[in-house]
Image (cartoon, rainbow over all chains, first blue to last red):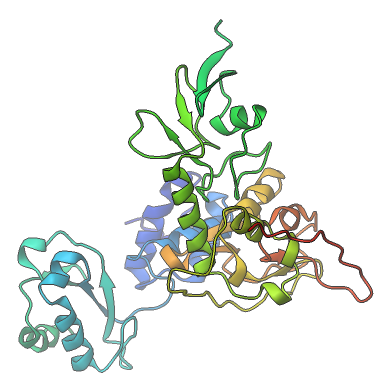
Length: 146
Length: 226
């Protein structure tokens, strides 16, 4: 990661996604200031940077919780009752899809296929994979994230 | 010899020059292929897909506005498959388009409506799902109503082609895709030079001039075939 942070002046627009990922990692989301600064330093319009940042589901333009839960919504997981997992997560945390718990501990999202179909249903919490889920397992898994 | 490309469109032998698109050759030969995002003299966008045609040997339908002609191509511009595809495309556009034609400024000069009429599209077959965005009238010379936008991207290309700082881009994804300005903020009067390039080419009622008291709005009657 660049020592000077995400707004190190760069002239190459092909750097854009890497810079946005850096910001996402550093701040937990991509703040408006970063988007405007990137547009400035890469010499591209703000709408283009915002367009890219808002397009990718692993980049967020709004602050997220400390831990981001992403339950897979693709077909194999769906066939293995991913909906029950989604329900279990929502019930456990008391939040709806796309929402963040009031204490900022969790954000609940869905994701497209994460390549764990052989162990469906699957989910990601931050960078960690959790597979072969059952509604009963959810409580225990969530406990380990603070 | 090198400067001519021989092909057939709907069984008729025609010629084109290298670099010409299927659409250009077809129009030169009086064949009407409907388009919604295409604008003559500007780079093709290929977003609306209404100009798709069947090319023999091609697995999929191809967009004629951005596909160059090649020697020996055999093209069908109005085959049943092509027509059916175009119809579905417009039906899908209408499925997320507000039912505001009665009070819309574009009403009977609307390109989207004209194309829907040309393709003889009837009542909606699909469950409709609308976009709701607040109308942006911060700019004194333009009203943007993104609820009516069909995302043809003409305004994006037109603004970009002017050579100044482009004002529009695409953001979000899927059904949420939207033409935005800046940080998805209303377009104010100071950034825009009011050249009207985007308003003039908008195929729906998404971009329009503000209504001024006493101004006449003349338009031809829309003739619905049937």
